[in-house]
Length: 163
Length: 140
Image (cartoon, rainbow over all chains, first blue to last red; front, side, top):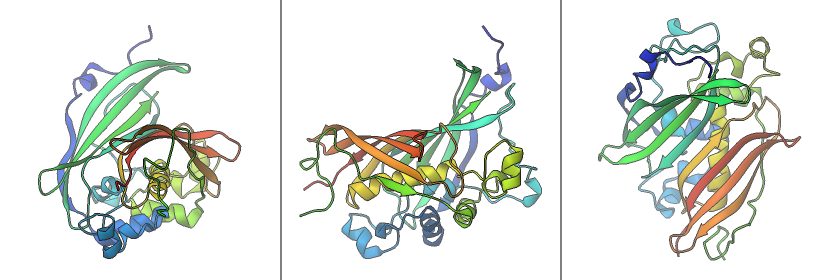
């Protein structure tokens, strides 16, 4: 049995709200910049008539856009050497490297331009596993996205791997 | 004749049309800007080397959005993506062509829901992301 990479005070944070709730409007220009930046020029993101024909109330947005719509504006004073922002919510672990392990998304209701989305992110899970390259920590940040009508529109689980 | 799949027109084992993607430096920069992501490994080759990467790194979530496009382009505008998940296994780099391929692995004809198994691979076959998606196809 290897030593624990998860200090008890970090384990105690499972379930804690890490970010939010924060509410943002879904902006047409921002969403379209995102669609162009990923090279997805689906007419339902650009054209009202195509969006209606596809059964949407109005122009919709690329599925993963909502996570970026919620990114808070931050001062350049907070940039670290690697270009990432200092993160006050980061979980203390006895590891040297954190990597993106993957994501899991559920899409429950459509998100359209003009919606007001409220997002809350929790530390959903934190556990140590044994891998072929030694022990690692699996950290899950779960975000729930709710619209102006109090409908849950999506849930994302971002999985971080730390070793 | 509808050009998009319906539960009556597809079968388990069907392959999706392959989608190829490649991002140059300007496109990586645009994605960093559109997602307000200042991480240096996505635009500074020297810094990417310093962190042990072979070249400027393609953002994981950019590949995630390529993945959703792969599914929604196939399924058509009236279909609805229900869920998607992927694992990041390896890094893709600037100017490197990647390929998405997918297979229908389950089909619920009553609910018109299809399950897809998807892989994003490098040209040499290395798996970048294994993925799964559930889609509700257009009902008619």
